[in-house]
Length: 170
Image (tube, rainbow, N blue to C red; front, side, top):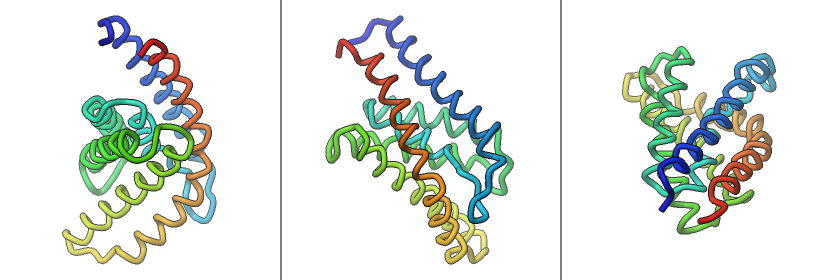
């Protein structure tokens, strides 16, 4: 079991790495458009760090990322990321613990899963409110995935470095 100051240090490093990714998203990626979409790293920030942690802390961290995303991004669906990111964090952690060990391939798998859950949940909520969005949503999913999936590689290396630093004595 980690001492209290080690837990604080661990989550401070995760928060700093996530803040760096938020900064890159806002300062750089928001200005790049490929195939009509911008690289969208927020689902990666909920999924990839979760692969290195237990399910409950991973879901709580992803919830915090979702709250920040909802505060930063204007959207038609209130609290959307707050609802979907904890599910992504929980699923990512369970996948890393039971199916595929945390690492590069696990990061790619959870990134794919994160985009699928995010966009399918968005399509479902729009469908429930009476908007037909399945075809457009799936096309958006494909484009976002193609544009953002290469960014999961440096994101995976960033969070792997953090996980190695904080789990050095586990």
